[in-house]
Amino acid sequence: MRTLKNIRGVCAIIFGLLLSTNVQAQDSNIVELAVATDDLSTLVTAVQEAGLVETLQSEGPFTVFAPTNEAFEALPEGVLEMLLKPENKDKLTAVLTYHVVPGKVMSGDLKDGMMAETVEGSKAEISLNYGKAMVDNATVAMADIEASNGVVHVIDTVILPPSIKKALASGDSYGDKEKKEKDW
Image (tube, rainbow, N blue to C red; front, side, top):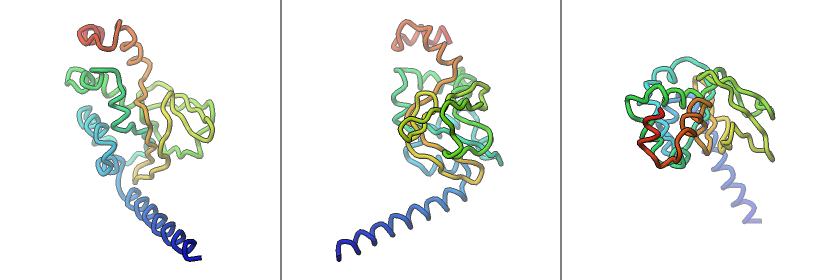
């Protein structure tokens, strides 16, 4: 009986923390929420480099599929560094805006086979597999983090618009930095 009370107490504490975190998130805009999340620091840097901070702080609403630091680290060697160069700002902007959908799209609104029109202009494919939502090849690891100007869904992979996929595929190998830079 005592164990049951302890479990109930722990559950109540966790539930309370989740509620307070959600209330704090709703008071923050998308950029503030990302800045306050350690695992989104690479995304924050990329958003700053692309000059998208002001846009993502605006009224919105926006739906952001936010790749984790680990997702950025999993990009082919040299790709992130290349995207962050000032001369590739347009390509970085294309990648980042491919992660943004106009409007507030909650996980319950996602349908299998749905094509989501991104701010970048291309469509990202939504699929539902065994209760998990996917955007292109990225799995939604944490859904429905509400912000004052939209919603964030944390994803485990950086999704790339068709134009960037094509540029990357034109290189013989992802490690051939000179060839990649020439092709971009």
